[in-house]
Image (tube, rainbow, N blue to C red):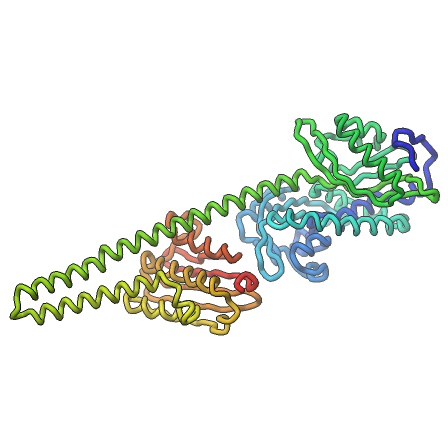
Length: 514
C-alpha cells in the first residue's frame, strides 16, 4: 500500500531514471503511436520519408506501400486549398488548413492538415504533416484510444531496456512533432517529486511552464481545488492498486475561463517491492475532439435540412411541371377534340371528317397522358429493370426532341442492385436529361452504366452549350442530383466548360447499392 502522493520523501536518483532519460525516444514513440496521422515528406521532390500507424489506418495503405509514394499520390495538388497551404508554409515555415486527401481506392477525405518545415542533420528540408479526418475520426476515437494505449505500453517497456542507443534520434525533425500534435508527453520522477512535460503543454492547457522540471505539487497548484482533489484521488488509487498501467480523464480550467478535458495514459514503473517510482505517459487533448465532433454534428444537421429542402422543392417543381403539361398541352388537345365534336353535330354533311379530327386529337391527348404518367410511376424499373428503363427514356426522348442518344449499359448489374437504388439512379438520369432538354441545346448524348473496382457509376455526357460548375447554380436540378447521390453515399461531379458540353459522373460504393 502507498501513502498519499503528498507524503513521498525526496530520495537519491534510482538507476532506472538514467535509463529513461532519453527524451528522443519518447518523441519518436509519440510520432509512431500518436492518435493523429503523421507523414514526413522530402520538400524538394515530395517523396514520403516516414509515416506512422495512424496514417496507414486512415489511408488504407500499409507502411511499405506509403513509403513508395509521393505527395501527389495522396493530395489533390491542383486544388486551391492545397496550393494556399504550401504558400503559407513557404512564407511562415508552418501552416494549417482544410484540404482533401486521397485514400486507397481513390476515395476523397476532407481533412485538417498541419504542416511544419524542418532540416535534418545534413541540412535537407523535410516537412512533417499531421492529418485529422474530419468525418470519421470522432466515431472511431474510443477504439483507437484503446489500441493506442496497448501500443504505447508495450513500446515504453521495450524502450527501458534499450535506452543507451536512443539519444541520437533527438534532432530537429523529432522536436517538430510537437508543433503538429495534440499530445503532451510527461515524465514524473516520483522519488524526487519532479515532473516534466513536452513543449505542447501550453497548446493544450493554455499555460506556459518553465523549461526545467517542476515539482508535482507546483503542477497540482495550477488546477482549481476541486479539479486538483479529483486528480489526486485518481493517482492515489493507481498507487494503491499495484497496477502498471494508468488511464484517467479529468477536467481543467484554462486561464481564459474555458473548461477543457484531457485523457492521460501512463506506464507505472515499480521497484522490486511493487512501489511506484516513476510514471511516463501521454496526455491527449479531448477538448478539440469534442469541438470537432460538435462541428460535424452541426454539418450533418445542415446537410439533412438541405436534403429535405431539396426533396420538397423537387416535389413542388414536379407538381408545377405536371400542372403546366396538363394545362398547356393536354388541355389544348382535349379542347380541340371537343371543338371538332361540336362542329360534327352542327354540320352533318361533313360530320365524319370532323369526327376523324376529333379522334386524332383525343388519341394525342391519351398518348401525352401516357408519357406523363410513365415519368411518375416506377413500374418500368420493376418490369424492365434499370437498363430497360434507360433504353425506354432514350427512345422516348429521341421521338420528341431533336437529339441522338447512344448508351452502353452493363446488364449484369441488375441482379446485384436493389430496386430502391435502381430507382434512385433512374431519377438522377431523368433529372439530367431534363436539364439537357431545357438548357444544353445538345444534339448528342452518351450514357454509360458500369461497375468497376467496387464502384457503380453512371455518366451522362452531352455536346451542348456547357456551363461553369464553380458558379453557384440557382436551379433545383443540380442540387437534386447531388442530394440523390448522397442518399446512397455517392458522389456527383459535373465536368463542364462554357461551349464544351457537360459530363455528369455519379459513383456509388457497391455496398451502398445492394
